Length: 561
Image 1: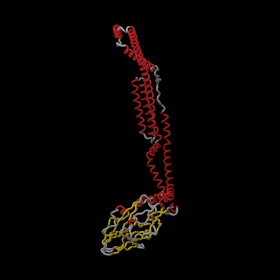
Image 2: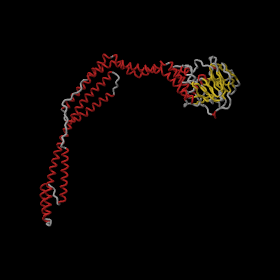
Image 3: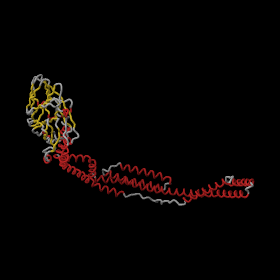
Image 4: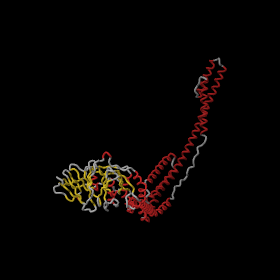
């Protein structure tokens, strides 16, 4: 079978590495083109453009500086309640400047200067914000200190009032206890004294209490309130520290040096950009040079042994194998007579039809197989001559237009299958009421399929008579246990054979493209292989094909065409 796309890719890279390198360089150049063109523009217009951009940058920063300076002077005399609003506005301005800076991509001197201008605006705004936050902390500390002192006055007043009430209740409690002890047996007298005391408490603004137990509870509540108030006063004794207020904030103003330095550095951007691009291009060229030898080493010493150790591919199951022998014409010839019986039809390429008896009916058949139209089109099995005899006739096919090719006839019995490459088919004889039966077999999980990049095999099923072409003659070789053959010579083989691989004999032959990586290995005892004696330059599967032709050849090979 044809050594597929890997051979084409490796050979193309090995012998056309300069084109491979140019393609990589072109891809990189297209990717880098915007930056490269921008850098080039800066280089050629450096003298005039850089200075003009520097003036615009200086003007923009100066304007922002003046605006912020005016805001700073207003903030120095702003009331405390206005500071919070100014801080919020400053934070919003800084956030807006940062978002604007993040949206700029540094690709040119103008973009770099725009970023630098925004950086300076952000620094100036931050200095202004620092002053506002200092003022905010200053006024907050003063307000907290005022609140502390006010709270102390309130707590002291509360303590004094509680102590006054406690003294009144304590005096009353002592008098009640004394009356209770001296006049325990004189109840009317005690009641009269309580009435007098309550009258006095009402005059003093204190709620009257009728018994000593309730008065004791009142004294306990006063005592707890006094203790709590004293603790609160103790916690507020420490004054709140007040930060030093900035009398005059200085804004950063040395941006001119940064702008001039950036303009000076821009003179080297173009040269450095060229160096970077050429470095990448040189790396691509070196990679292209060493990629092919390295890939051949990996395929020969690592991947090929894996493919050899795998079991052969079986294209048909044992139950599908035909027990009838295949009839094979022993010798190929430049002119091949085909005997047609009534009820049969010959489908062949126009170029190979030499003589047709006049009694035969001829027509054109567009597709060789309606079941596989795309395969028929890709393999050239379309626009075929259809010959139908009324009696036994002989049609002569010839490869006279191509002296290197000879034709061979193969008769497939019922249930017989032959794996072919449809491009090597010249024609076939079928029943007039039927057609050629083509079947596809996918093989994806074998290493040899990936090394050859052939994932599909096309099988022709009998009964049918095939006419195939081969360079310098087509030979049919029976398989006795095992047969090794180079894949570029194989035209077809019995589908009941085991289809495996064997690594080519020497690495030197493969590395120099004299030999394919893998040889086809057929195993079995009841099959044959159809192979050609020689390969022409146009049909050889080792001949490199470049451009679209090589690409299409690899795609057809992957689909077994």
